[in-house]
Image (cartoon, rainbow, N blue to C red):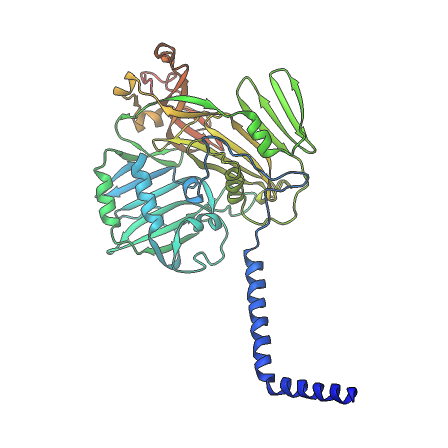
Amino acid sequence: MVWKRIIRQLKNFYTTIWDNIEKLKTVLLSLLIVLSIFLTFSLWTFTPNNNVLENEAPIETKIPDGRKEKLSNIIQPRQVIIHHNSKHYWSYSTDQNKVYNQLQSALLIGKDQVEFQENISSDGIDITYPTGIPVNVLKETFKFSNETPFSNYEGNVERLRVYNDEGAWKIQFIFKAEETNEDSDEYMDPVVYQFEISDKSTKALVEMMVTSKNTVEVEEYELDGNSFYLPIEEMKVDTYFYTTSEVDVNLFVKALLPRDVATRKTDNKIVYAKSKSQITYHQDSNELTYINLNSQDELSRQNAIIQSLDWINNHAGWTNTFHLYHYYDSSLDTNTSNQQKEISYRMIMNGFPIMDNSIGQISLNWMTNQASEYERSLVYLREEFYNDKQDSPPTVAKGADVIRALSELSNANNISDITIGYALKLDPDSQNVGIGNTLYLEPAWYYKIRSSWLKVDFESIDPIKNEGG
């Protein structure tokens, strides 16, 4: 009968299943393991699309002649000082890059939190950053043998110190000193983490840099309680002549704003707007200001410096070489409820910053996971142009003259940094060679008060007269 045949087939099926039950268990377990691995991989490698903001289309446009940059390229020293045989040397230009890149490629071994010492009487290198660098960002540019090299300590690194300790080369990460309390101007000693450098060629590197053409002997000068390494003698600094080019503002409009943008023109301005975002193009100065008022996320996914780098990379916005020169996290200020981060990148040439605040600077205000304001020039330096003036580089004043000039200032105690920088000048001779207007980079001394860089005024000090100063 049919029902007996069905029962017999079911019994055979059941017997087959039971005889192979262990094999089936193995297959099912393997499938579960593969599924678990796939889901875990997807979870850990998932990256949210930061380009898509509220009411905003993805960034699709790339800037011609622009490029992307790596984190290690935009975080670079402001000054590298080499100590050798009780003398001090300022290493700049390509030599500065050589010293720093070698340290970045070396494995940093161990981990010790040590007491801060103002000076170490040993051959070595002092590396100063133009601004405090959050350690969770800086550690991404070095190699450590320890997975938690700073024991989860959070703070901003202001400088590095490399020194010889009885034949072993060590590197110290020196953090920004914290105030003892809010109502006091006194500071605690900086936190210092120390590592051993695996690279055994550090000594040879120091000796080579001392004799380099891009190294000048310096001396430590005091100014109202602060110390600065400045040249002992006057210093010749190369100047450069460049043709310029300009990015079409419409490329930024396409890159940063959604489609169907409304446009309105006012006096010397064009405003492009969509929803809560807009770009103002200042026609006289060839600058743009991007404002984004879209709602903010509650939790930050990554440090603002890394996010701003990725954001500019998305539209290939690095038209020249820029370094991080200012970072301020207002959320750490107890006197304000503002949560934004101030970030600015400054153009670098020959190891020195270009102090022009238009062409020479890219500035951002960064809120949680997105830019709230973005300011930059549409003009950039394109090709170096030879000029007879380059055969006789200008001379800048020696350190003693710089200190003498700055000591006349009523707020000299607020000076936190001194450096050589470039001022951008229009070349009056460029029309005579048939290439249109060009810019030349004129070296000069600058000093920093808070976040502003100002040119040293030598003309008010007699008898100092130095065109390059």
